[in-house]
Length: 296
Image (cartoon, rainbow, N blue to C red; front, side, top):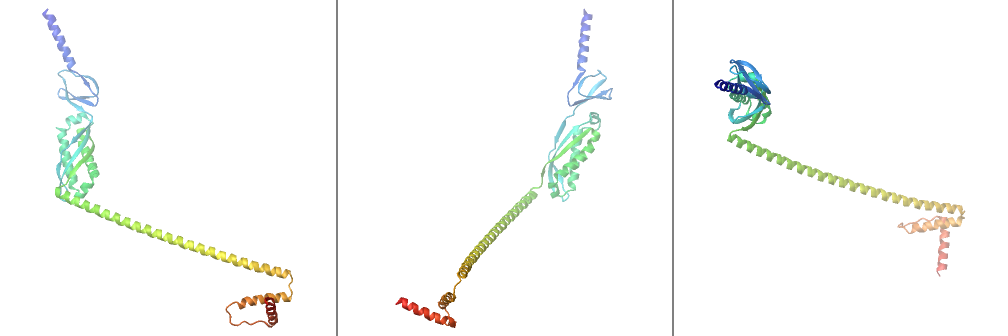
């Protein structure tokens, strides 16, 4: 009976031992395994069985991308301005073995390396360059950190300068400078608006003057064309009357009478002296006598 109990206890102990050495590695995880104190292998996703008392799990590592948000730290620029700069580091463990055996306390090592790299980069820049060159700073820091952490099995994906805080007096000077710049731009915009308005008014007046001159020109042309047409009609009427007179074959008395009518129109003018041809003098007297007889 005692033998059966001991056997059962042994079976249970073996079962517990086996179960305790069965490991399931989850997605985006990696287990570093040592055998008798030396590196053996890296377990990836799946079911694994550890040899009791010989193998042990040294470190469980997450392969996901991780974020380190560092607090603000003082940095001195090339022109001796002390600023507070805080950064954010995005990294990912790519080699579990190097991460385990490459450096002691890798997170602390990355933090110190980030701080020294940031000081070195900012030390080569002046204040204005620091405030306007965040992309340059981010690119340089990422390249330097990625190269330095490669032997540790760490891949630095991105570095971001989250905030740059210059001293209070520098901030006040910058705010005044920005206000002066905004006032200058506003004055320029107002001047350009007034200039544009004056140009538009002048162009409008010019176009109106051109239109008025064109209208007057058209009116003068139409008036001249009307007068020319009237003169042409009068000339045509005279030509028609002469043609009809010629077709009627007038005698000398009719011609003299027409000449007398023309002389009468001449006499109605402002001339003080009129010379009458001799051949018309008798005819004029005859016409005057006939007029008196008919009037009496």
